[in-house]
Image (cartoon, rainbow over the protein chains, first blue to last red):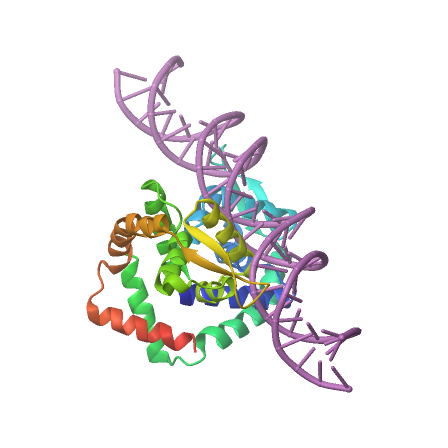
Length: 129
Length: 129
DNA sequence: TGACAGTCAATGCAACTGCATTTATATCGG
DNA sequence: CCGATATAAATGCAGTTGCATTGACTGTCA
């Protein structure tokens, strides 16, 4: 827990000092980019991101307001909506990645070799089954 | 990051459903218990816990208000104070541990063997150098 | 000594999160 | 088809966190 907290603090600080939004924006936009033109329903995004329902709702609200994401009504479910990344959302991803990558390299990857990565990944995935 | 977030959510939920305070209270009290009768200065506790200064200040405020911690003026530094766990603070630690232990067992330890623990610990400590 | 820079801790305000509930729609059993 | 139950998403309110600043004191150095 301490290590992950440390990493999060470092990465968030690096993003902020580069004038970029928080990591959660990157996370959400990345999922939406991967979903492509079909977009994602909020509840799908929620499960990917391990966010509480109301937190996702508000994160989306901010992303929409900043016009990185657009909301479309769902054709198949009157309660629901479809979230789709916009052109400027994709642009934000591109602008954030260099800072994010550098932070990962500096704070996380530095000192681990590729065998370590595989082993760490294996162990962590044993925890969440 | 996802795994640690998942663990945190689970453990916090288990504590809450047992009617217990959040993990950060446990963490702080445990550090103070370890410090013994000499107590700790807030800035020392802050560094142990990786909390921002203002967050520690407010966490302590709550712990004092709930009388799990007492504040004493520092003899050697007029700006500072000494934090000491109270009897009921120690009691809270004892009451929280069974739920915390069970949560660790269920969500984290389950499925890892002792070789895994050593290896995971080795890898994580390589990250924070 | 006494200006000045540095450190310890608290705090006002804005943003975010947690909790409970609400609104709207869907699904299911009879 | 209807009522009951379930799911999707939003929201009011209280509590917490982030940010910037402040107040109080310490240590340094001319």
